[in-house]
Image (cartoon, rainbow, N blue to C red; front, side, top):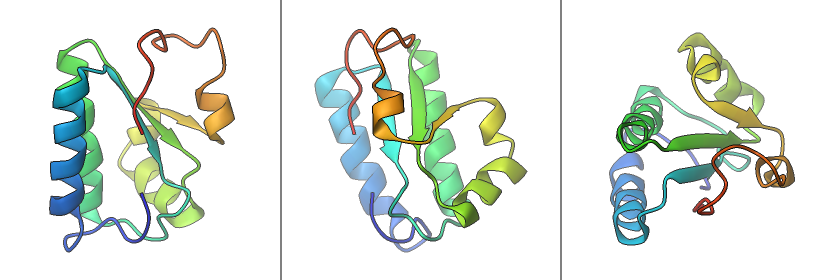
Amino acid sequence: MEGDLDLHTVNGIRAQVDAALENTGTRTLLMDLSRVPFMDSSGLGFILGRYRSLREKGGRVILVAPRAQVRRVLALAGVDGIMEICASKAEAYRPGKEGRENGPIE
């Protein structure tokens, strides 16, 4: 993802991500937030919605490299307690990590 994750951008991103999840059947979604400078409650809702959807299927969402402002929003919402947050893609793809068998989509 790149740019703000807010009311103005979430609908387009949601459609793309949901289509990719449906078409691939993956159970692990890796969200690279390193190029997201701002996120509001709409962005938070987008992330939580994908989390709920995948969790129902036994899957998971991994957040990668959120910037300080985005990390604060995630922490205030308690997301850091329910989703894995990795410092880099390399860490997220590290062999032996639980749930990596069918490969995440980005």
